[in-house]
Structure formats: C-alpha cells, structure tokens
Image (cartoon, rainbow, N blue to C red; front, side):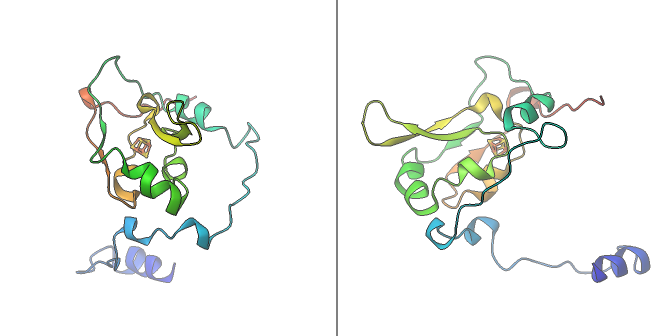
Length: 151
Ligand code: SF4
C-alpha cells in the first residue's frame, strides 16, 4: 500500500524498474495434502452467485463445432498427476466450471478429466496456473470473449 501510494501519487509511475516474482505462478502450487479444504459460504444470490449464473452474465458465446481452444499436450497428465497430488486444481482455479473430474464409466472406480469448453470465459488462468503446464489456451475462433452489459 505504501509503495503503491508513493509510486502513483508521488512518482507518477515513472519508476525505471518493476518488481519481479521469483518463480512462475504454476510452480508455486503446493500439494493438497499440505492444506485443509476451505468451506466457502453458499451464494446469497444478492451479492454472490453460483458459477453458472456468473458465467451466463459474462455474455460469452461460442459457435457450435468451432475448433477446440483448450488443448492438452498430454491427455493423461491431469488424472495421473494433478488429481492425486493437487486434488484436481483445475476444478478450483477455473472461474467458469470448465474442468471436472467425473466418474469414468469405462473404468469403474476411476476418474476421467472432462472439459466443458462451452463455459470458458477466456481468462487464460488455466494456461498460467496448471502445475503441469499441460493446458494450452488458444484464441477461440472469432476471437470472442466476455461481453458484459450494464443492467
Ligand atoms: S481460460 Fe481456462 S481458466 Fe479461464 S475460463 Fe477458460 S477454461 Fe477456465
């Protein structure tokens, strides 16, 4: 806060350097075993809303049959590594509920990684935060993104 005030009000953003993080964001995720689950309060539908309501309010649309814009370098990594070590972080860092680990009907007792790409609001968090760096977000066909409207 002190630095922000100094930089903004006194120096007017003319500082000839910038602060750097020591590590990339994806390298800072810690194994789930080191943490307790957070019990978030349910949405009150006044100030806070469930994910799908929030996604619909972004006004993001996708044409049917458009090329896949969320690509996995290796489709086995999520279930093999991210689920057992990080408890499937994609389910949490994606703000739009795009990623799910669902029961694998073909392999009872196992999970499979499901991508609900139609929900994507193109924030690119998954590309940055995936600890395995296995998800590649590419610009969707037409370059569409959120279109919030004032209500
Ligand atoms: S870019 Fe990734 S994290 Fe962001 S909404 Fe789309 S799938 Fe979720």
